[in-house]
Image (cartoon, rainbow over all chains, first blue to last red; front, top):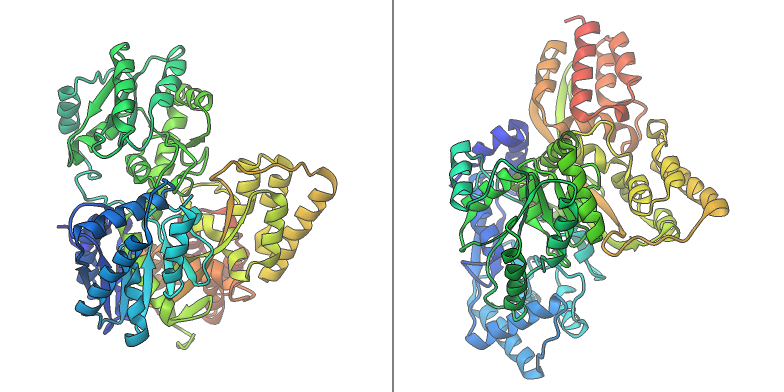
Length: 405
Length: 217
């Protein structure tokens, strides 16, 4: 586990000192994070990385997990899908069970801390306890809420409105609620296996293992195959290849729980079988080092999603100073300013045009990549995330646009 | 500032971004937003790029101009909005009024109703700023220069940009202190800098250069 001081070599000593200054301002207060799982999933991953670093700053932060039976987690999975806009059937009985589980947890948990930070919808109704115990309550939404199911949203909104503040990952995820809304984008850890610097030999041996020819330009898309259909990417690549020599690598995890997944995989594989310049790599879980090497070896990285959460794979690619062509969905417009720190496209034709441009103009591609890396360094590393994490508590204690601490 | 006049205490500032729950899909809605959002939002959208893109020179001008130019493809309006000389404004209300004038004039003669593609709407935001004192205290120019070399860009930003527009001071914190310690020529030089023409690192280097040239160490 990295020490908070280790980040000074990347973000500067001054930035790390500022975190210590900030932490001092909430000395004596206790912070409780509550979510629904200790391992697996994005929230657990964030808390696993952040809580030890926050503690190193001297902040009294803890993390608790709610309990639930199988039915509860089936319901919360449905709620999650509904927030992504999927049609789901949730009965009145299901809502009642969801609330009962939340109330049981509220009665059993120690909620005696100064700040209670509730992550995502699963524990959202713990807020009912506020009537009895007070405290400062924040709801942290990690889910992309671009097009939520209206009925589920109204059910949750009832509870969200009882919090002091709601925190969202991207401006487009924010909803109309009468409480303070804070923007805290997620972050990447520059010292993790997925993002740390790699020796050239490691990159070389991983690429060799996958049978990728490094003497030719590599156009790469790394993503879960259930989340986006790469057929459009294949079309764009084929259009660009008429003018530039390049190979396409589509890498990602499988699709265990998505009904559309196998069909998409079949189409992609069929396409790849017909074309020896298209390589499909199904990566097992925890392939962080492999993803790191693939990104570092790429000439151009694509992230052409039809829908997207925050899209942290864009941050990962930019951190490696790669030119990225991406869709303007979810949190991607925060990470890429078109023609400054990457390229945003809307069509297959546009994507093909920019693949061609970036392969033909390596100096412009390099400039985009370098700008992208600086942008990630300033805005999407874990140290910025910790700063925002600490500020959200202070923002409940102090009012006004400028606060002198 | 609560410090002896011969000392300079470096502060720093950290911002929390607030979502205002208001968005624009076209120029008319942008105008409506600019008219109604709080001052802190106008400041946020005209200064965010300076901190977020401090590596770019010239950096994108301001959020309004960037969005109008790159998302709506309204080149003329975008150019008008981006060429505003922000250093001339000492009050956010004046800055807001100038944006309104430019957009209203444009709407009168050249407006075509162009909508942003889905996902690229303009979201109005603002920030809550927390100012903290650092441990760095300069008693003379030599110490000042050494500290300026190592403080974060947020500290530099606070003493130069926030001093002008948000605190509505006539000059930045550095030039004010230089004058107080009798370095009037240096104070005048630093006061007359247009900080919007530099990246933050470039601005840091320029102030250090001026201290080297004009300062009587």
